Image (cartoon, rainbow, N blue to C red; front, side):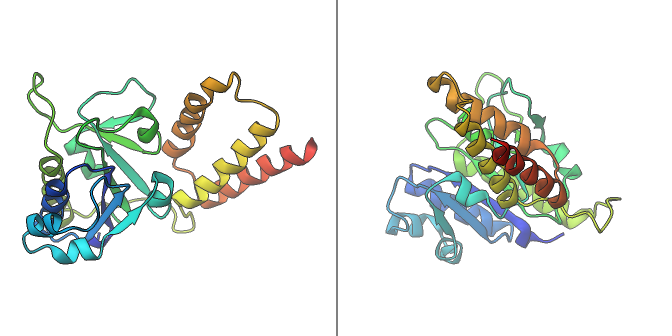
Length: 237
């Protein structure tokens, strides 16, 4: 297991102070990877650097993307954090369940904006949702507080435990980029037969498709097979 495999992803963060505090929390536990998606403040700025308090290197080495798909393409497993239980067919886990995750892979912890958290559409990109146990009458946590709780817990797992996996070394899990490519081909063919009807239901139907494919532990070979199937179906028309 390596701490270099862990990514902390802030989706549409709104406050400079929180971005800086998150960078500080990441460095507190010797992680290095910070990803931002469409931050509201100018990034970086003086307030972010000031509140990072010694974690300027985390800020300067961070990656900044315009959308989720770009940010997640090279990450194997996405854990979306949420204060709300989502009534969706996705695996809901708690902190203890993180011990079962294969930290030899690239793991991304996805955090929503301070005002609204993560939408169902954004969560559809994730393999798991994670809820931090809090007062049921006051569940909302500050962004940096949520991150530091998870950072501390993951650091303790990496330090104390190696998880043996029985999967054959010949089987390679599909990357997010490979899944995205396959899904894009599927969507292209469905668009050509006018599958997404009525048009106002298209976003929800796309969300459901992502939920199906992103939560599956597909191998790269299985992804290639499905891509071939979708390509063949397109040629048949």
